[in-house]
Length: 455
Image (cartoon, rainbow, N blue to C red; front, side, top):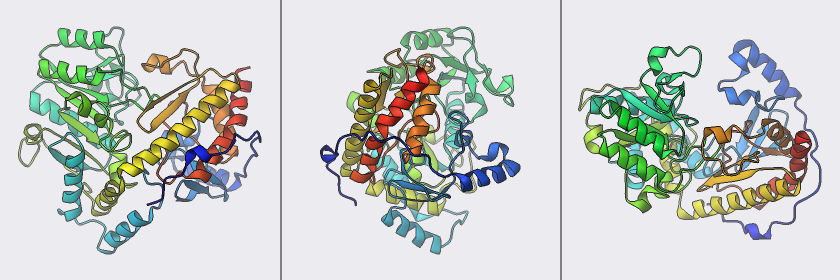
């Protein structure tokens, strides 16, 4: 394992401006991609529509660094949107994956790695049993189905700004009142798919109490990101998750904690390790993804043994998947979790603290209104003068134009940020002195670019 760098030794911020990097090969690939793929990408945010410009096509990655098809190197502050906790191409993970590939890539039958990974997840997280799937979307979709099958109820409660994958029932926007059934949030989702979904403002206890009072016997579950990261990082207020768990218990509904993003990322036990483990409560169901797959398409949902027992083949709630528990993905996930020691989390925490403090300092010196918010090692920067961001409406006050200018200045200086103002920043145990210093050197000019965009 790579040793922890002494971030206190990192030197002063450089005043050098960014130097634009060549993009001819990426541009050519983007043109080819757009002729055969909608928008030229296979997940919308990758198209750079939110920030403008040409998306970088990545050729390879190692440690904390990405290399694009033009040969440009970037410090990676996305880490594949969270999964690469140990950095890219970690040698021990690579070796175990290579050995697994040599044995075969898919069997359509049970394997030892999926049992071992399930045991590792149960040992870390507040779940008694786990079922593997191939994506976070599948995990949340299956958890919702299971909650409805277990309770015999039909209504689902979610929060505005919390993303739970592209499940029809959860791609909903709020109606005119706090307890109004939602309307579809995207074309292609029929009203019938969202008419049993209620959308509430995040961190709003009164709204939760009202909706349970109005639908006391119909709510199957309440689902929430354990700490939202899909509207930028908006942590739950103190005791909010505990309040949700207790409210659900009191009304016979299930509390579904979505830890696809935060699970095993913000701490060894995910977001639950930062609140539930301390406060003494447990969710009924939890969804996992990203880190637990070690960079491969893998996800899971788990929970109370009596709830999970309702799943086929033990119970009547059907769920299945051809590649669920894939031996390569479970091998990568198991290797990643076993290597994710306390030292790893301490290292990432120190690196994240250095970067977020330096970003705030640079923006403040440039006169850019902003707020930095974090949960565990995951954080984001909101370009807003509204102060603390506690819900989706607050998040929408961020200055997307200022962020776009900031993003491109950082990109030109060799730092790859999320190409959206509403995403989290991630670091890994591979972010050493050189990687962190590259980020710090890029920040002053990027902050001035953001300030110029606001002028």
